[in-house]
Picture (cartoon, rainbow, N blue to C red):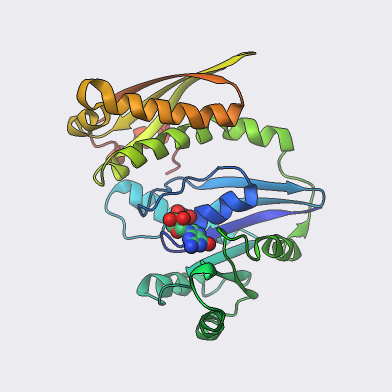
Length: 291
Ligand code: GDP
């Protein structure tokens, strides 16, 4: 059995979450066109008859503004050293920027790096070749693979290629266990994604969702969750006029959660303010971030 850890890195918006979702064929990581919304390091796990690939989706590498940013940057780079393989994603439809160079510098000593040129559905084939040319001397990449997660180009080939770089190991995680472990996290991300989708620019960095309880019964699942913000002004925005925004967030989230369970869902949402939670380490710990 080929089993191992694979880290997905790259600037925000290059398509990390979309690729992961495509590979796992189930909505797992959060995707959004607002940058830097993937905060947690997510382990998406791909299983088939001959392999288990544990993906680590690192948050966008960025200059930290808050403590949370610091933690995430540290985490992103710690992860890189422990993995069997790194997938470095760059957006082939954009020019090579300082952000990519920064990451390349960090990758310098890492031997197992595959470069993925993403979003190739947006460019012509000869441009893809030019991109390969541009990148091939910047690092000793094991492979350079052009992909499109949206058009499903080279994604299966990528999975087969990844297996080449993993060791013979027993599975790290039981297939069944994986789903249970991720349940709370997934549900909280579904809700957070709907908060982001319905609210304005100022909200994303300041919101997290905590699941208080999930009761899974024969015909129905009940979910109780808190949307946590760091300012009362945001709390007002999220609740909306006479609770209308929260109601919309709730009903949109409920639909996705019902899809996930394949059952009726009762969702109870409330909004909590925890002042400056991003700078409060114990709250970060409570929310499952490692410091
Ligand atoms: P992340 O920040 O690196 O996780 O990037 P996301 O996966 O959230 O993707 C950022 C944006 O790029 C989203 O709007 C995606 O729909 C889009 N995107 C991702 N992959 C592709 C692709 O293969 N082709 C195209 N055209 N767009 C893509």
